[in-house]
Amino acid sequence: MMTLTWICLTALSVWAFTRARAAARISRLRSEMARLHEEACREIERCRDETARARATAAQISRDAESWAAGHRQGRDDVFAMVPLFAEARDRLANPTEGRQPDGSRPMPEEPLPPGTVSGSPRQG
Image (cartoon, rainbow, N blue to C red):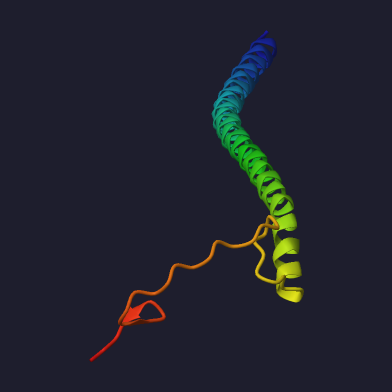
């Protein structure tokens, strides 16, 4: 009977020791899981913030690209509108007409200079 008591006491103590070790291990694993969960939550929040910043940057780049494209179109249209003027100026410089205005009319005659002026400036005397 004594042997049976010792066997039961040994089994009970081994069971209690094993249960205590398992409880400690489970506690460590739970705290590790909680730490990892907090770390994952922080990482997710960081990623969300980064995504929001990236979306804001992408929206700004899109607005800038649209603005640049509109400015480019306006500038191109302005240049296209000025090409005939450039061509006309080039033609006038290459082939000056005999005193004609750009619309083909003759210029108005100049008024006679008042006495005492030379080419529009008063004489120094």
